[in-house]
Picture 1 (cartoon, rainbow, N blue to C red):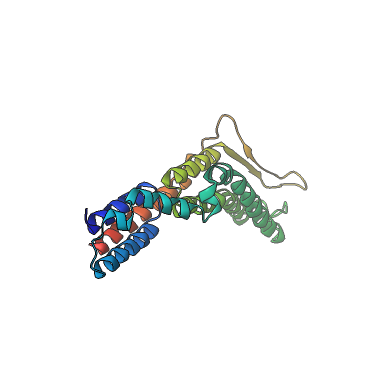
Picture 2: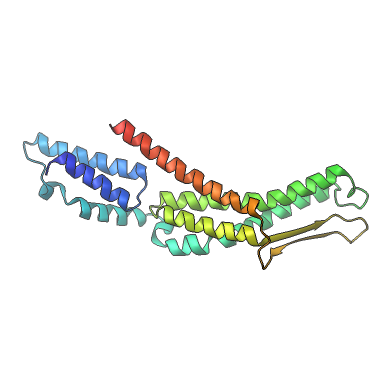
Length: 224
């Protein structure tokens, strides 16, 4: 078995273990450099000298995942973390948005009937729902890919975020008299059916997956 076939086998093993493409490229390049050094010494690059690709891939995968908390504890990060982070971020966004509207006098009864006030309140409500979902999906999805955990954890986060989007329910009524305004956010059973909102995490997940596959194709083209 020659060095090129060993190199290609190592590449397949590393990809099969869901390691990021940039890391696979770097490991294979170092492997090829090591094989060239052996050839320069007038020796044959045999598996005994270079190492078994399967064992090397297992070693590199274990070493790479040990670098990050997400790689060491994927169940905790990608199944427990997304929902609390989304809720916490939504609280911050809603608080900031409605504090800004209140500082502009938008919640005064005299201003509640203006179309601009109603439009700004509707925008603040939608931003409070969409921004946390998009941010958490992107951050956790990217972490799943870059930590070597793989796309399966990206889609696990996507399923959680889509389920949360379907269950969330908001009520907004601007005040027409002092004290009679109402704003609430909660979970509804059966689901509220916010399909447009549930589509946002799905779009982010598809975008991340497409980007990874596109980068892989570009790397393979450059290598060839």
